Length: 156
Image (cartoon, rainbow, N blue to C red; front, side):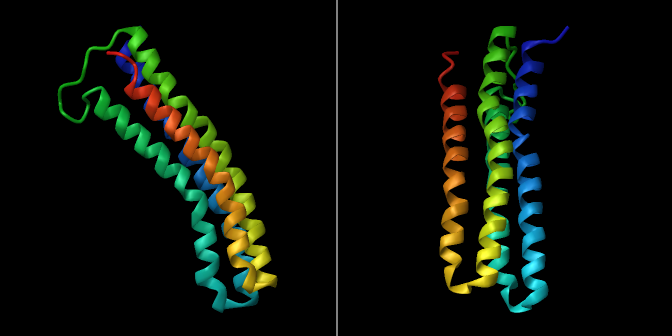
């Protein structure tokens, strides 16, 4: 039988799904960056900046997983004995960043790839490419905020 503690740990794992999106997003941007650098190796540093942007969602998912571990006492060696209801609440707190982080990182990878291609043709327009990719980041930050607020306002 699945316990509340297991559900909480599954919630941490679900929060980490944002890392899957980051891996895909960084890969998408990396493919575009490799094309630009093949034409002009001097643009490596600039393309690397845009390629790294979709990686932030993975960091947010990791942060949320760590916060869940802290909340349930896993790191302190004094893990709480959670009821199924409590475990489900914690599981639910991992969903926003896990789901939104996964999808937004992929979308951000596509936006970053477009920004990289823009920079490849017009190097003076790099900031515009960063802004396009950063707009997607807003929704990952909102999801992280919702996840954190859910986790720390459970009332137990």
